[in-house]
Every structure is written in C-alpha cells, then in structure tokens.
Length: 111
Length: 115
Image 1 (tube, rainbow over the protein chains, first blue to last red):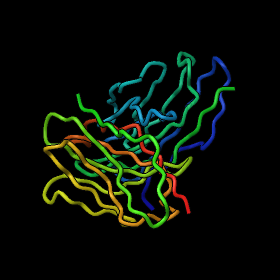
Image 2 (cartoon, one colour):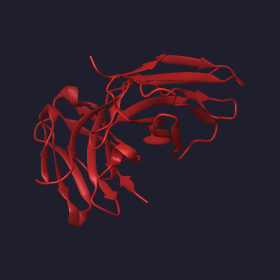
Image 3 (cartoon, each protein chain N blue to C red):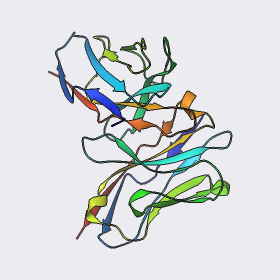
C-alpha cells in the first residue's frame, strides 16, 4: 500500500538531547513537509522540500533541522536549541496539483 | 500573505442534525482549497478539495463544501451528522502549484456530537 510512514509514534526526549523523527513515503511525491501541531494553533510549517538535496525553512524552523538525501525520506531533527519541543509532529507529501497526504504523526514529549 | 480563518473553535451538534463549519481565506490569486479531518492522535485525512469549476464540491463521508469567491469563503456542510463525525476539522489554502509551495492551515474546529 502506498502511503507515508512516520516513526516512532511516541518519542521522549531529555533536556539538551537531539532527537530525530523519521518520515518515509512510497508515493513517488516530489514535495515533503514537516508540520508542528499544538492545541488550538492548527498546523505550523517547520520545513519543506521540493526536491532531493534542497529544502526551505517554514514559519517556525528555529531549533529544527532536516535533510533530503533521498526522494522517499525527509527526517526531522529536533535539536537542543528548540526550547519547547513537546508537540505532535506531522509529515506530509504532495506532487504537482495533487492534495497533501499525511502520516499518522509522532508525539514528542520532553521528560 | 495567505491565511485561513476558522472562526469557530468548538461546535456541538446533535446526532442527525445538519452541520456547517466556516472557513474564510485570504489569497492573492486563485486559491486551491481543502478540508481535512483529524481524529485524536491521528494524521489528517482529506475530505474534499476545490481547484476550479463547479463551486459546490462533494467529498467523502457525505460532506460537501461551497466556494464563494465574493465572500472568500469555503464552508463545509453535512445534512445529517453521525456520532463518528466527531473530530477536528481543518481548512487549508494553497496555490496553483501547491505541490511546490506551502499549504496554509486554519486553527481547526473541534466537532462534538451529542445523542
């Protein structure tokens, strides 16, 4: 089945630690996105990538980093510089004028 | 800059009653508009989309939405809600080539269904 897979579903981070969230798609989509979701704030764009080896900052990129070495993969690293990382993270992909498809999300909690 | 406003944070509807969720957008060109639904702890599922043509679009699960350019609105409707419709609903706007530009989402409307 084609789709987007995010892992892990739940992730716990200690203060000062970097963690990486995985996002893989087998839809052959060119564009991939990372969103952060907090209660009452909707989805806010962190980073997006239109093509392999290229990506752009979204609205809230500070404290995050990404890579796009393969078309299928777009991992997100939450660095220690992100002061409030506890949130629900959603990965999405799209191609051309098709709609965006979303993964099931990763809930990150700072402990 | 593009933006989406969903003025209702939370709506409660009786099962079997009709539903309308409001969405207003701001976009400098012809918008592409979407409604997504999210169950707790899950990703987003596309309900319907508007690209061009007929301004009344039909989606999955019996939902429909009407694009009104003069009012910059794209309201979601359902004639009779079911308990399984309880979820959070997001409206989003993008451009003609949104695969290569970002979508902008509203803050969402949480729908509660009462017996």
